[in-house]
Image 1 (cartoon, helix red, strand yellow):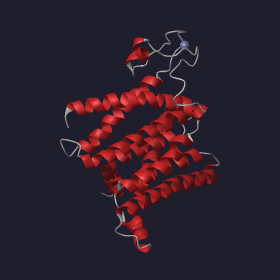
Image 2: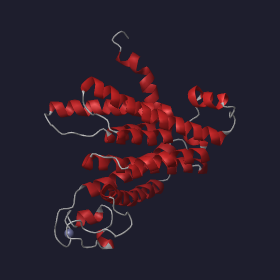
Image 3: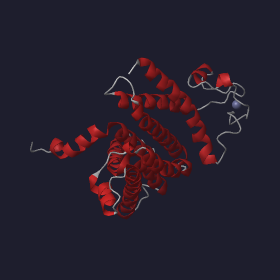
Image 4: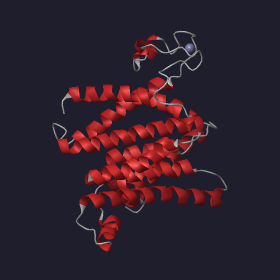
Length: 292
Ligand SMILES: [Zn+2]
């Protein structure tokens, strides 16, 4: 893959990240994404195009509004850089084996960057407002099955559940239907596992650890990466959450972080490194066993 492709992916990610910032601010406030154009939330002055260039404008204005001087959160730059990095990461994951992105991989590239963008918006809204907007998760639950029906290759075929349903219903050998079924199964398992864990947590710890927003978020993820990916993503999210929780405990920080960002991180990792994580997961008992 030529370097220029990665540069392009990064710049595209910066621009998409700039739009994701708009979504993060406006979706939970029920504002239109298109109108009005970018403006300062304090003085309401519109932001000129040359003050709206990803990363550079924030640095040049030192994070202050040009008109009223109010501080503009570093989150804006962070989201742009993160989106740029994730786009490069997605491209690298797909280009590992070949010099150019084969045309057949383009739908997967598009679907994965869309899912990654949705996960970034969901995470930052969840951190700031403790909700995950339906405009992201429920929309993803509709988009996922449609994309998988058009491009059945998005989710790797599994014999265990999807294959069984297709044989049982006499629909085996019809790839587009197979993609649709795989996506719906992924959606049900993804949301089901979070729902079950939430109920279990309520019984065991008498605490609300996972909300219905998380259930819908993993429904969306499952619809894109299938039931095995969704289960693995949930497991990875719990591991990452436990590690961060221990670190916060040691540093005596009493910051509450919602579970959405962990689910998003687990999903991103699985989306891009499914093979390695599955191998690690299956070998985990032997890796941590004291009787090796
Ligand atoms: Zn201002």
